[in-house]
Amino acid sequence: MAINSNQEEIQKLNAEMRYLEQTAEVLQQRINMMNTALADLTYANTTIEGIEQEKENAEMLVPIGGSSYVQVKLANPDKIIVGLGAGVSVEKSLVDAKTTFTERLDELEKTLKYAQTQFNQVVERINSSQKRIEYLLNSTHQGNV
Image 1 (cartoon, rainbow, N blue to C red):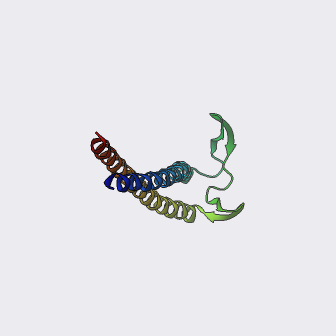
Image 2 (cartoon, rainbow, N blue to C red):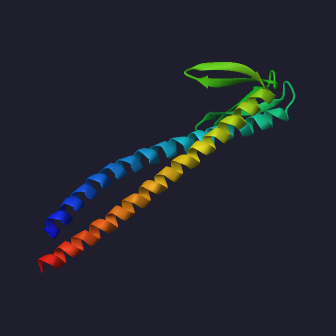
């Protein structure tokens, strides 16, 4: 009778582990997306700090992707177009844009930390379930000998 009980528990743990593994995968994808967004926001913030040091009509190299740049003249260093999402952008002063990016960075770092904590908890639960399954399998095997 203990063997059937062990087998039932093993089946439940296996089902739980499949669910936890899917959850871990989703969390890992979210963490990767947040890391990408964090790098993007950090780059934007650094760029704004660089622009802050420049005067009007200063010549600059602007990255266009693929390790390529275009040389431009800075028309108005105090006006930044900031994306709000869903294809909507708004013009902000350089100071307001810096504040916006700093707030976004802070919020994203908090969200990332929370997601990483959740991921770690899920991984701990997977490891604990795996150890329990191994114990049950060993005890079932010993009971059959």
